Length: 101
Image 1 (cartoon, helix red, strand yellow):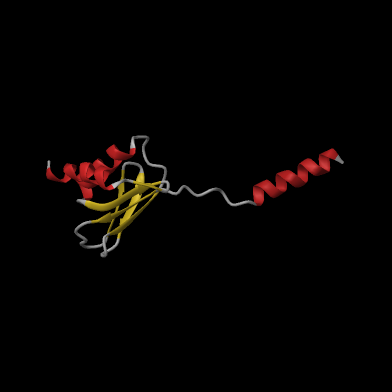
Image 2 (spheres, one colour; image 1 turned 90 degrees about the horizontal axis):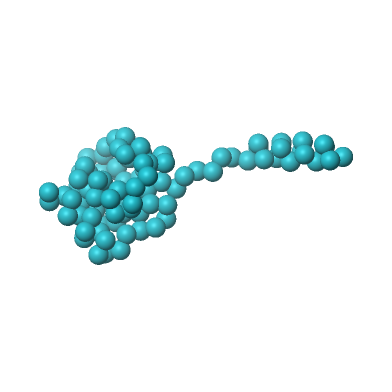
């Protein structure tokens, strides 16, 4: 009976979909053309409306540094978040300094 329970549990667990990483998202201050790019271990897709979404685990780094690196590549942002945690207005202002360097 124990063996049957273990087999049933294993079958149930293997039938569940794998968890999806929340990834990161941003809104560009100056939207432009749609683009898709692999950057810092994430596949970023930005629409012409300036909304960008990323898939993939990304490289391990603090959120502020990740935002500054994103801004240096893509441009200033009005919103940046990772795994459901968004930067505050003060943090965004600091992040956007990377665009002026």
